[in-house]
Length: 103
Image 1: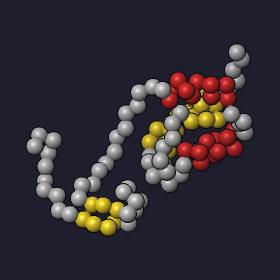
Image 2: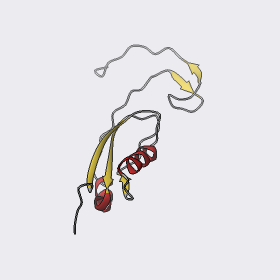
Image 3: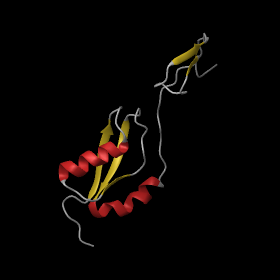
Image 4: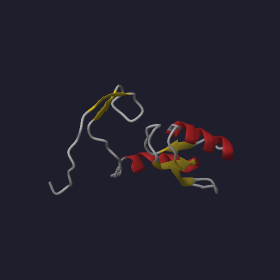
């Protein structure tokens, strides 16, 4: 198998507000590549590591997608939105007593 200079992985710190596919399209256009894929979709509101595979390396995306992943997030207790996520409109709010992991 022959590899070119643009075959491999590209690690992107995806900002919120764009889809994983938006990032793939931007890289495809910027580097004039036909084959660009990602190793797992991030929600448009999510930020964080998006692994892109370029050129001949796209065939390895399934291996990356099957690997263990760790997610980190923030949660706000006591509030409900109409979409059940941070993008929705607040529909109810309840007081929450202070607590720690030790409680």
